[in-house]
Amino acid sequence: MSSYPALASRTALRGPVRLCRLTDDQPRTAMDSPALQVMTDLTRVAAAVASPATTVDEANHSMMRRGVRMLLVLDDQELLAGIVTATDLMGEKPVTLARERGVRHAAILVADVMTPTQRLDAFELRSVQHALVGHVVASLQQKRRHHALVTQPDGNGGLEVRGIFSLSQIARQLGTPLELPDAADSFAEIEAALAH
Image 1 (cartoon, rainbow, N blue to C red):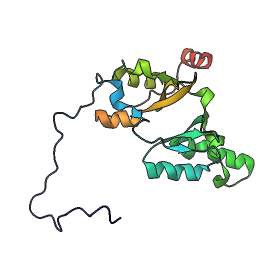
Image 2: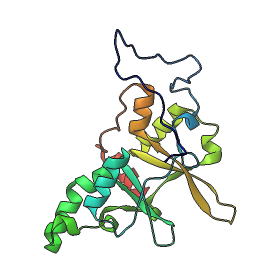
Image 3: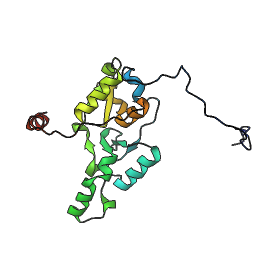
Image 4: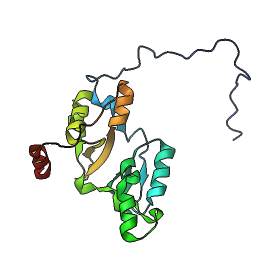
């Protein structure tokens, strides 16, 4: 570490100490802000990932360390196998599976509770580039999803995940709570959800 000299610091803070204020050049997030302003761009932020063989307890600890509520699940070839959310890990599903299998909760794996890739929806980057935050919020609420992936062509005829939208992160950036609508309560809504 000798190539990095320590920074000079104050040994004690005395007198009134205030917090600096946001500068006007910081983009404020609003519903009519560009959608990219609220997307976690995986070219700038390392993805939070897990393996299907990770236990639900290990995945939960990983989420807490990273301060996230969703992990991308990658298989042995580093391909997307699905996603797992805090609700998947801490909800009823792992408890029910442990009881049904007669095993301890610690034996339940991410593969047992994750949403597989085939059941995921994603936005295309080219449509997100022209969208506003309000479009993303409306889409998440319509699909009743807390998270959505953003994909782009990988240059080899396939897709790669470029970004992630998180309803809770968008709410923090907007400074206002955002909720998902209640579950379908009319027969027509249930029928439409099943048909989709």
